[in-house]
Length: 226
Image 1: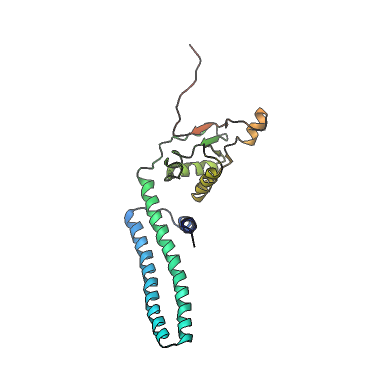
Image 2: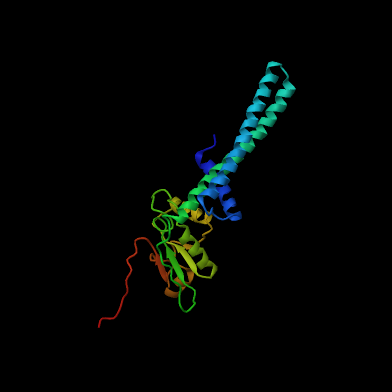
């Protein structure tokens, strides 16, 4: 039997492909229109299957084996198309959610600075409560604005490290989730190689970064005593 996880994987793949071709919906009305189109196509496939089943029942009553097998083959193909259409319905429904969340309560509250001298910088970013809403141990809703900002920083040559308390499988889930939204990392819970070389040692428990992005940050400065 196909598991819910396997179905969600198919939905995620469909949504990823759709997002690569088209941006998130600009309005709820746009999303509703696209979803209706997908639902109508799904309904058409289902109605075709019901009509074909009536033909199959007629062939069965008449003991017409050849016709019954032909109809069964068509039903199988129609059912496969129905599954594909249903996945598209689920993906577009999820896209509506992502589109609306992007515009409402998931606006990034993080101010992301860049070095004034134009040098390459290292950013260490937390996951739960930062890249997504904190729904630990599940993954929350995405902070699209922050994700897009970090993607833009990497395109400029800066480095981004995922810095999280998640471990083992939970890290793999987080990394895969970020990759789904187009965000990849230069390191995960490990300092950059050049920093290890600069300070010596094979590993440091503290991640060096020029900037730390975390919902638990306490901002402050250090100055000489007057």
